[in-house]
Length: 147
Image 1 (tube, rainbow, N blue to C red):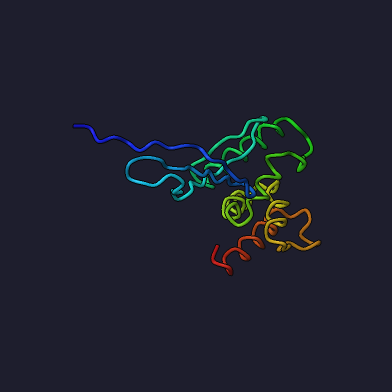
Image 2 (image 1 turned 135 degrees about the vertical axis):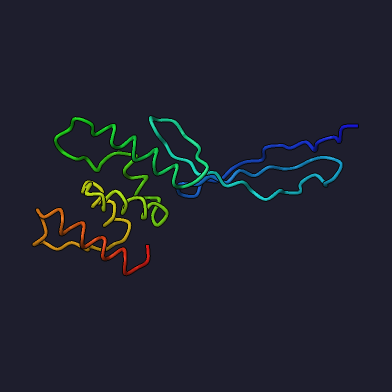
C-alpha cells in the first residue's frame, strides 16, 4: 500500500546576494502545520534578463563567464560594465579560484575581477604591459595563500 506523501505549501523566499532561500511549509499527517523544513538554498544569477538556477557556484561562474565573454565577442575593448561581470565579482571568494584559473591561463581580462574580489594588486605599475609578469605575480599571490 502506498504511503501518503505530506503536502507542502510554498511560504516565501528571501534574496541574499547571489543566493535565494526558499521556505516551504510542510503540512501532513507526520507534522504539525507551520513546521518549517530546512530551507533550500539555490544559487541563482540573472542572465539575459532571466533568473537562472544553478546547483553550485562553479556552474554559476561558468554560465556568467560564458555570457560575459559572449557579450564581448568581436569587441576591441574589454567592457567590465556588464551584469554578468558584476555578478561574478559579487560572488566574492566562491568565484576567486575560477577567476584566478582564467587569469593564470593568460586571459588578462580577469585581472579587474581578481583585484575587486581580493582588494589586492599583485601586479605593479612596471608590469603594466608584461602579461607574463602579471600572471606570475598573481600565481605567486595565489600560492602563498593556498587558493
